[in-house]
Image (cartoon, rainbow over all chains, first blue to last red; front, side, top):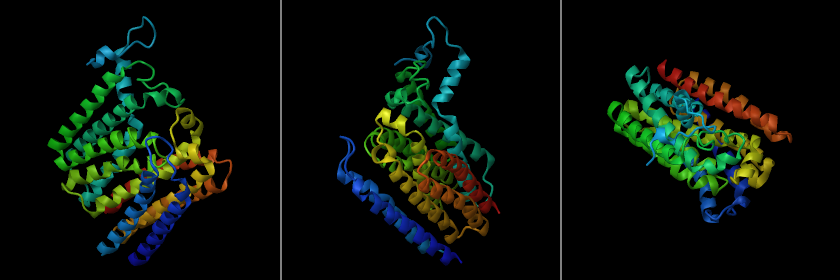
Length: 63
Length: 304
């Protein structure tokens, strides 16, 4: 049961996370002088990387 | 530096500021309504960390320290953002903008609240809780307010880390350390933040545009924002399933689904409806109730 829930969670988190990156990939142009396209890319990808890491961490501590 | 009392100016020429008005303004600066939700996540995280009912005095002092820390952050935020607040209808009557409290005095007040919060949490809870609360202040004031808010459409995504610190403070107050369970609670608040704030931004798009804040609906429009609200709600729903996979009880799983599926339904309606304002308001208000109830479920499941 817990494994099934983990798989569903992983599909939701990673799938939607990838969709977020894909849908916002064209929005990386800086919107102010304090921003750059590299920082915009970092802010876009960082949450996805953290989410994938969290799913992997959860899998490693499953009872 | 001006004293707090010196800085409280009269709202109308010749009038004398009443003590009750000063106190009200000092409380208003801390944004008590926002803090109440943060403290729900803090206290419920303490139940999860304890796997039962935590010590009442510890809860009390953690709540006091948490309020002072968040209140100090919110006060400093209003000092920095007073130019933005002045042109937004939602915020143009705040004490600093209205001239009832000077920016210098408010800054001193905010810093004092933060210092006291660190001492309260450090001496009466744990020093890790105190350090984490200080990290929250730095993230909110330094990362979000001073940097991200005015420079990127991802401001509330990355800046959401500040709002996700309170559960870590509660957890650290009980256990003195941060383990996987605490990280999960942090992650839940972190991924809840984008759909919550972008729903609000859809409602206040004109205000944010006038103030020059690059919120997503201002820069890329309402459709792009509605898509992101839906996608982040899916990420949030998936993230809230992880605690069950990691060992939480069936009570938690049922609660997470019963609360999360309506949130997803609202996000779908918001995404489908071009006249997004009503659904944005519904989604925003439900998101507040959702987070509070989800953390209550976390506490109940841990205490059973």
